[in-house]
Image (cartoon, rainbow, N blue to C red; front, side):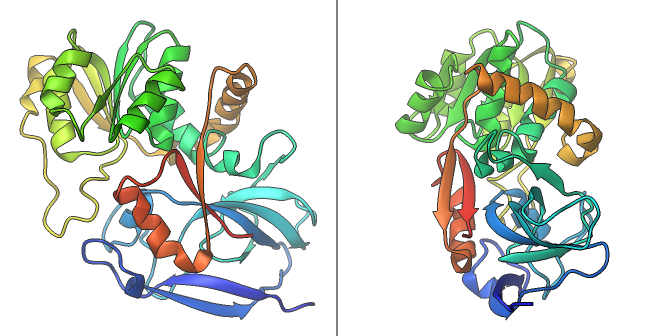
Length: 335
């Protein structure tokens, strides 16, 4: 068995505020070998997600935190290079939790085969992966989307937000996005088909909402939290639904998260606010992905990946998410 090097990024300490390079350790190990019932996967691409920041924190959450000294958790796609598992053979391309490392050993649980001939591998970390599933089930299930709904989404130029707005349009609704910068807002309207966009960097958010959402909104899909969530609550229509998908503006706070002061709008409008975790819908991923792939083939659903390189630069790449530097789904190319 050849002993290729396995470069790994470990969580060395729990960040206080913004993650620093010193919070991680990069080490080289021999490539792992598959035991009975296991596979070894060579990582090609890793998904960089805001949720990673939460996984670094100690405490109760929807998933156990990454332990100190453990490989940083990450979803990825790669190719099976060794297999002692009946369901996988050498050469298969798979998606699953690979971690931030060049090779991953697994018992195959939670891994799915993917076809690079049907879509590029990074797409399986975007529209055809957890990102797409988050948008799909967040809008249709938690948001209880109905034809004609007015949908407002923050972080709209990100991977989840951009997909949410397109799905709203495909299903017969109206989509308004909130994003930072003219280029991103133009992309939402001119490329993804949003009805309007609010540039929070150049326009007062309350004035922007008044302009773009004069009739209010039926669904607010929140990816950022903080002041933008607070402002969006003022535009709820009767029986509106607020989907709490993420709160990227709050993840690096050293103090307690800032909650909304306009929450009484939920009472006045008989609205509801509900958290969304994509893992709750795992048994339905395949059906949703099939439907999304159909829309992609028809040209109705577009996607954009922002690909960066260098596994040893993982901390710097990750922080692009919190600085608004990514444009589309942020993906780390490993090989």
